Length: 368
Image (cartoon, rainbow, N blue to C red; front, side, top):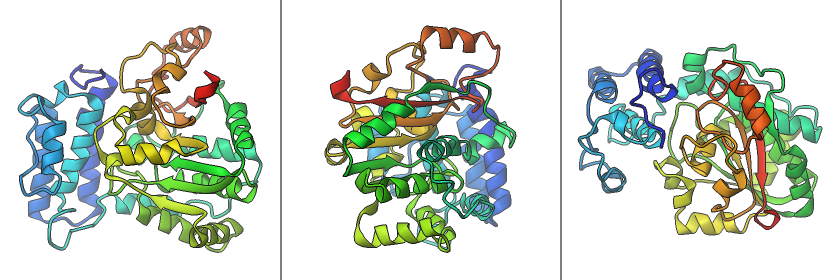
């Protein structure tokens, strides 16, 4: 299990380098008052050198987090699983900024200014319409991750041979095989990633590769730029003057495109622990497309897997055929062949975490 208590590790850097800068930017972006500012500073001090404290009993999800953190309360943050600790950090950030409390800051996205700036500079067309280009745009759109860019900067670009696993042909073949079925897309980031995601969804619907698409977003702000319903609406509005935007609005009107959410998407749990109602929804899908790094970590398990570990074996628990579109921005990776793993390890670079490599991985249970 990946943890953040190893100085110099990627996970350690997230808490000790990325999060302090994130707090600084949040405080600069919105005019929070003394109470919110002090709460954010306390969260930063606790998460970088203190012990895990549970949510106040007045929090609406106090009982759930108390159970999820059983055995962790009172221990240093770094001893918790990295995925769990990151999730709890963002839940506590919302608490500190008053997102759930009665008052003027209730429901105010602390990352809203970042998302708005990102979307404002984004293109308004749907790309060139070629399937391969649409898939590539959706894949590499995952670099539009505001949390990642806090410490990576704006210059992360794909390396040569950047696509280290390319199941793109299998992706399209599976959609052709099940043409007209229901496709689920579990979104990652808003802004410049959600735009090509929506263009890809439009293509699936207009070409009949999907009879309907269910787009899953977060129920609340999470991991800086993760997409919520408000972000979907802002993006569709951004596209309003183009053909893609018009088709998307009509698809939402007639129900061929639905936007869904569930509290599980902000829980500190892997997809092994899908609640029954979500499992049933995914089980009926022709294909589920999981976007981004966080969904990948939740799919395969946030562990120090050998990179040649079978993708099929780690995702066989998922209730539908599944496709992962992900740029590499954290340590976990599976499904590489031995030669590719050796080549990447020989580069002497942080290839697992620098965002310059990506995977398109597809698994269909009956094909394993």
